[in-house]
Image 1: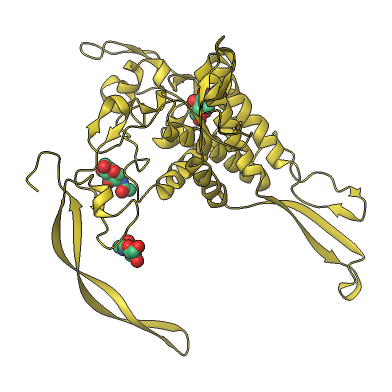
Image 2 (image 1 turned 90 degrees about the vertical axis):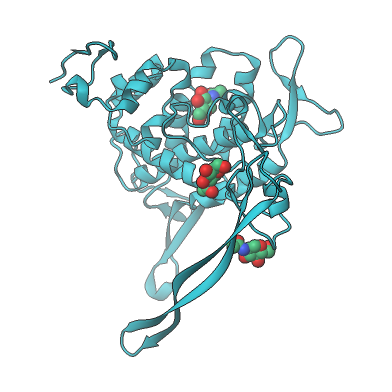
Length: 363
Ligand SMILES: *[C@@H]1O[C@H](CO)[C@@H](O)[C@H](O)[C@H]1NC(C)=O
Ligand SMILES: *[C@@H]1O[C@H](CO)[C@@H](O)[C@H](O)[C@H]1NC(C)=O
Ligand SMILES: *[C@@H]1O[C@H](CO)[C@@H](O)[C@H](O)[C@H]1NC(C)=O
């Protein structure tokens, strides 16, 4: 039974939170309810692992709410997809100043940055769309979704028969388009067009790694009958692909009447459908600045022998670094014993860990 709870005093909002008495309402949820809805989104459902019903996820739009209500099974997949793409995003950027870290205490997840149209938000939009498609398609493939007929009736097309999943990616793409793009389809400003483009590019990055797998049947492998199905690669493949697209992202500018965007530098070619596009330059992410979504790199671990983005020079923005000597134990000299055990020794190793100095600290 759902009861309406009116919280007294400080929280003072009418919250319909199931049967929770007011004082057990998690602080987080209160923050969400107090937050301007525009900043809340379906991302929360997975990222925060909130088991709230569709009516109580703030910021869901009418259409999203409808889809949410009608497809509880798909929503579970969406939530799983959200955790997966967040992890994938962090993997792709672990060695960078901007490392896709989110703040679960902040319903905006990425701070205000994501409201901008930087390269980083382009990536986040794309990978989030990809993550949803991937998780929904996987769930469909496992037969977990009522509305997604995956084990399509066997039917022949040419010299092979379909067995198992054929349409799951198409279903997932359609669902993701309807659910994720619900908002910006309605308000067609230029920034929305940029986001739409990146979301679409993310969905395509999943489709790209669907392959047709077949198996031979027939007398002693004669392959007189083949059955085939569509197999979905790991999300990592799409993540790697989008990461390269991030590097080659195309800067665009809005065209005069605001109906679309054009490539900002006319020496560049028009972005293709799988390119990422952005319109605002990124901050350097060296110092903390909430307004641009930068956490700064104080205290980040850097790699002294690297020459890349994780080098102490680059990561610490020239501020210098502190070095700590730490000893850790790990398993070593592992041997396989017949049969069947692996025996290891414990070794200790001493390593230097370098961390970036804070801005304004003595170098
Ligand atoms: C793109 O995806 C994001 C999150 O993944 C969503 O919030 C946004 O509404 C989508 N944008 C468009 C243009 O559909
Ligand atoms: C990402 O950066 C933030 C702030 O610079 C830091 O707190 C966090 O630990 C980093 N995350 C990872 C996974 O390195
Ligand atoms: C540091 O960078 C070097 C050179 O790129 C690499 O070989 C090494 O594995 C890195 N160390 C760590 C701890 O990531």
